[in-house]
Picture 1 (cartoon, rainbow, N blue to C red):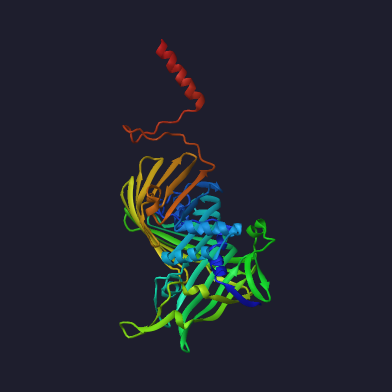
Picture 2 (cartoon, rainbow, N blue to C red):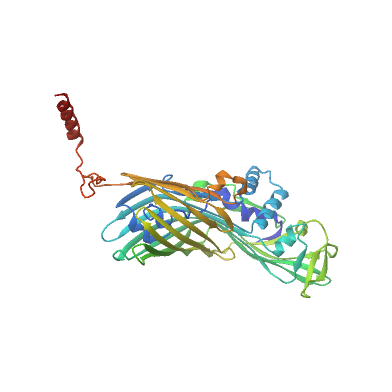
Length: 494
C-alpha cells in the first residue's frame, strides 16, 4: 500500500466519470408496469411472466432498453474533456457544484441481451441475460455547500456529512418461474440470478468540521471502494493520478468473470375482486464479491482552516457556528491523503421494491398506481407513477399518466404497445414534456423493444364478426381462397 496526497480532482473523476467510460446511462421506465402482457414486464415483478405468450424470443438490440437522464449536460461535457485529456480543475468544480445543487443524482441502465420465455400448464419459465449499469450520488449538505459554494457562509460544528456515491456495472444471468396458485386469484413468481461484476465505485467517505486549537479543521475519513481496471501513477510514493490501465482491453473487461455474486427477485399478484388487482415485488436482493482490479482509496486526513477565512458566531439557538468571511470556496486549498488498499470486498446490490394497484374500469381501459423504492446506503429514493392504459383495439394499446421520478416532479409519460400475430413492439417516453419543453424538464428518457412469438399454432378461425359475436368463420387456405375468388368471378360474369 502506498500513501500520498492528491487533489480533489481524482475523487470527482472516480465518482462521476469512471462508469461512463465503460458504459451508458438510463433510468428504468415505470409506464409499462400495469401492462403485464408486455414481454419485459417481469423486470418489475417475476409473477407477471404468466401473462406473456407461450413462446417468446428476443435478442439485443431488440430485446428491450430504457434510456433516461437528468442533469446530464455537464456530466457529458466533463467526460468528453477527460477522455481527450483536456480536463481542468474548473471542470470538476462545475460538475461538483451542479451535483450539490441537484441533491440526488441517479442513472440506471438496463438492457436485455437475450430473452427466452415459455408458458405451460406447469408454470411460466424465462431465461434472461441482462446488462445493468447505475450511477447515484448525493453530495447535497451543509458541509459540501460550505466548502464549495461562495454564497453559503454558515456551518454547524460537529455535524457529519456522508458523501454518498455508487457507480456499478454488472451482468446478470437469470432464470424466472411463475405459477398461478389460486385460479384467477393469486400468482407468485421468483427469479434466481447469477451476477458477474465488471466495475464498482462505492463511497463511504464522510466529513465533519471540528475544533482544533484556536481554529477549526475539516476531517475527511472512510473508504471509497473501487474495482476498476486502473493503475496508480506514483512519484516519490505520492499518488499523481489513477487512470484506466494502459493495457485496458474492452473484451477482457466485458468477459471478466472474477467478481461473482448471487441474488433473487420475488413477487406476487392478487386479485381482490375481478376488477381490482394488487401486486408487489422485490428485485435484485443480493450481493457481489469483488476480487479483481481492487484499488480502494482510504481517506483519513485533517485540514486546518486558516483563521482569516472564518469566524465563530452563535446562532439563534445559542449554538456556535462557523461563518465564512471570504468570497471564494474553502475547498480550493484542500488536498487529500490517500492509501490504496487491494483487499477484496463485497457489496450489497441496490435493492428495488415495487408496489402496485390496478383497477379495470372496462375490458379496454384500466388505471393504476405504482411506487418504486430503491434502497442503497445514503442514496435511498422512490418514484411513483399514475397510469391510464387504453386498448384501442386488439393490436394497439396507448399508455399515459403522471410520474414523480426521484426528485423530478414534471413528468408526463406516453407509450405505445403494438401486438401482431408474430410478436410485439413497444416504444415510449417517461416524460413527453422533455421533448416539448426541454429547458424546463429535469428528466428525459425513452424505452423501446421488440420480441417474437415462436412455434405458434396455426390459427384456423378468424375473429368473431360484430353482428355474429358467437360465430368464428373458418380461415381458408391460400389455394382455396384463390379458387373461391375465381369461382365468384365466373359467377358474376355469367
